Length: 431
Image (cartoon, rainbow, N blue to C red):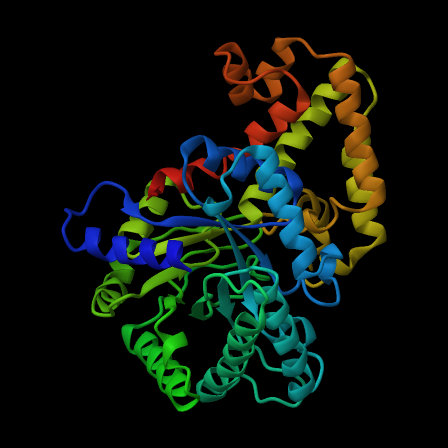
C-alpha cells in the first residue's frame, strides 16, 4: 500500500542524507488482540497524527478463528471500530498479517497445511489487510527439519499468488498489498529457554534469502508483486527469555545494516524488540530496522498496571487479590498456552505471573478472567482510591493525574500504564 511504500522510500532517502543521530523514519508494529492495547495505540497515534500499524498473527486470527475466535474480517471490523472510537483517521490505519503461513497447522502434512495457509492469506487480503508477512519457514509433518531455504521461498510464492488473486478478486480492491519476507530466530513471542547471546544474521545469509525469494517470484510471474516487497525479517541480535533481555548491540549488526543500504526499496523488520531500552530502539531504527514489532512487551505493561490496581483494591476496598488469584487459577487449570514454555517447577509461580514471554496474554479473554477484571475496575471506579495509593503502586500515573493529563478513572489509568511500553517506539521512529 502507498503509505508503507512511501514510508520505506522516505526512510531510505533520509538515511542517505543524515548524520548518525536523531530519529529515523520508521513505524512501530503493534501485534496484539487486546482491546486496551489496541485502543491505547490508536489513541496515541491519533493524538500525534501518525499512522498506526496493527497486526494479527496466524495463530491469533485465521479462518478457523485462531485463539481469539476471530476471522480476518472479524478482526478488521474490531480494529476499525476501535479506530473510529479513538478518533484515528481511516487513512492512517494499517492492518497487517504477521507470520502468515502454515504455522497454525504445522502438525498436518505440508500440502494440507499449505492449502489452509493459502485460504488464510486470501482471507486476510480480502478483509483489507495490506501488509502481509509471508513466513513459511516452519516444517510441517513429513518435512525435513530445518526446511530448506529454496522450499521456504517456493511456499512463500504460493501464498503471495493467493494474496494477489484475492486482491484482484475483491469487489473494492483498493491498494495492492505490500509484503515482508524472512523470519527470525528464535521463535516469535520470546525464547522457550534461557538465553546468553544471539548470532546476528550475516549479510551473506540475508543476501541468499533475498536472492532465493526474488528468483522464485520471477519464475512465478510475480514481478509486480516483488516490487511491493518492502522488508526482510532478520535477527539483529535482540531477544528476550523469561526474565532477561538480550540488548541490541549495533556494532554486531553493522555489516547487516550496511548490506540493506545497497538494496533499493528494502528495509529490515525487527521482531522481538520488546523490552529494548528507548536508546536501543532508536538505534535499531537508525540502523534500518524501520519496522519495529512489539507484542508481549505491551501486554506485559498492561498486566503490570492491572496487578498494581489489584494491590490498590486490596489496600482500599479490602477484597484481597481477586484478579490475580483468578488469572493464575485459570492458567493452572488450563495450561495449554504456557505448558511448552514454563518447564522449571521451582520457579513456576514466578514464571506464570512475571515471565517476559507474558503467556498471560492468552487468558485475558477467558470469561472468568474478564469478569474478575470488570469487577475490580468497577469497585475502584465506585470508590476512587486516594492519590497516596496511586503514588505507592502507580507512580507514573500518579504524576499524570497531578499534572492533569489523565483522570483517576480506571480506564485512564489502565490505558496510560499500557501505552508506556509503546511511547519509546513512537519516539524512536519519526512518522
